[in-house]
Length: 149
Image (tube, rainbow, N blue to C red; front, side):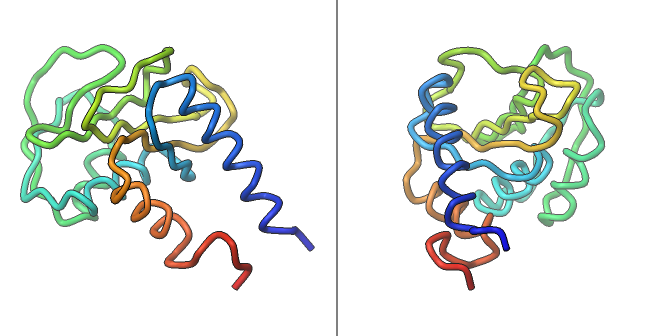
């Protein structure tokens, strides 16, 4: 049987390293950038967002799943873009030292085609402690990580 508390400790260590590298005070790892975006949209609750026409379909699907209206706009972008008018950023194609933008929610991807190729996974970078706690709770399906139930 897998010791979940031991596994969470590994995730916490990884989150701490991501925090140091990116400059984000808080990091929450999730299973994909798509779900990181979904959690951010559910937390921020915008009525609508503007997305570039050239983006991954999962971004639009996360917005629709969160009940957010979408407008598409032709836009050139490289590595990162903002889900306007929110402070949520799709940073799936960027992973650089001190990349964190203050007062934002930056979503990362660890897909095998991205910069940190660990196969699958994602993360939310933020400096908002209240949001961080909400993301942790949501990531764990409403359970505290310090329990196995």
